[in-house]
Length: 496
Ligand code: ADP
Image (tube, rainbow, N blue to C red; front, side, top):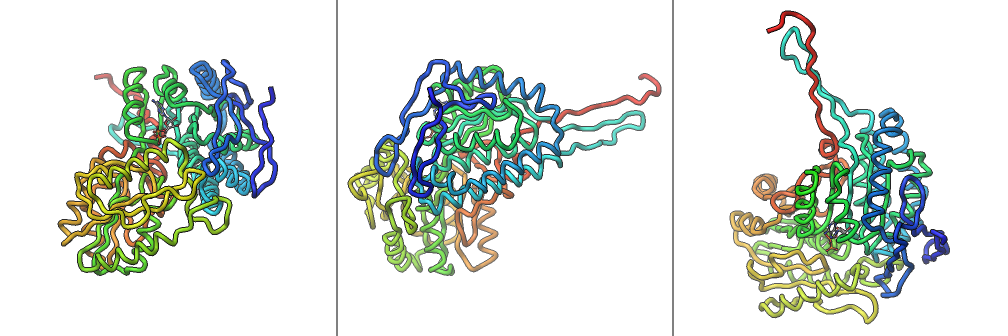
């Protein structure tokens, strides 16, 4: 069976799409020869089908990753690891158009945003390539007849389970620190969006990485994902996705071999606008904060709190702004918002909209399907919300936000923190003191001041409270992929 199919995108024309499992630098079909369909969210039609990994394939991928970890990858110097990674970043950039087009086709995000994602993927891999030869231990002076030092060592075989909202970007956040620190990888892409990662895998091989260092499988969470999180020979699992699945993964990790766990989970992030904010700027950022990537961001600014002095004016202008967001074909140059990723997500979001209406919130704009084909949903704003409503508590993961008033700083902080999540938050104000006081008081892993969603690979990202465990990005992520060995050397002298 051929493990490549010819597909077409409006940007690239025809291209060769790998559909196999990428294990040990080879394309394989999967032990059980299963396949599943990949759906185009803009048209609801099948794009192609790809090979589906089962537990047996996870075993093979883990064996390849283990062998590489203990042999070939161990022999590669940090400097050479860096070179492989920088070459890979260059290859991503050279293939930016193709990777972005595949991302738009499979995920539904606009081609402009997809290109932004792929640029960020290259930057992230290059950044961590730069770290590869700068991983250092310490010498610790304890006694004159002893020599103590630490070595940050790789953890081993890392299982990495990623979501569908930023298929390539999430992949880069995961592989960057893992490869830089000398680990090997078994990556599972999300079943909704396997295609771009498969194209990427060819670039890993082209960059010259030894076989088994990076293995990629397509498959379902309950089968391949569960096999990763409960595997006895995986040393660490890193996951991005829903809080509910995060819990399952942590349980599986604990009851199998106590593998290390990092989790980047959901959010219900507050976006707080004070009376003294630059209103026009604040509206742009609030709009971007919720509708970027169709609301499918774990850090989306879903709860918007506006100080009472400007509330009416703000709401009026925000409604106009939201209605101007161009919803439609991801391949149109001016599209801002494409379809939601799947029928399941579409149904979930529509049921939240229904629940908001039933609980008595007011739909200010949107609230309906957009068009009659594809999983498109109108940008939606609810007002007249109360903290206990479902739409104020649960992560909707779609283009739906709620807006409410606050009186003063104290109330803004209280409302902002009134959630079990703590991934991100934002404040809009011209007052430096307010911005620092409030950002200190908000229980969130990232706080944006007078902006939103401005992520950078140099800046750590992760959750307070139930939004996660550990940090991705920046130097902080290196610690999540290393373990410290302390060495104590006795230099002679009297025995005690
Ligand atoms: P969503 O509900 O938005 O699709 P999920 O958290 O379910 O998000 O999915 C994120 C990733 O987690 C995907 O790769 C998915 O296959 C995987 N996944 C889902 N369920 C499990 C599970 N029980 N064990 C391991 N991985 C899972």
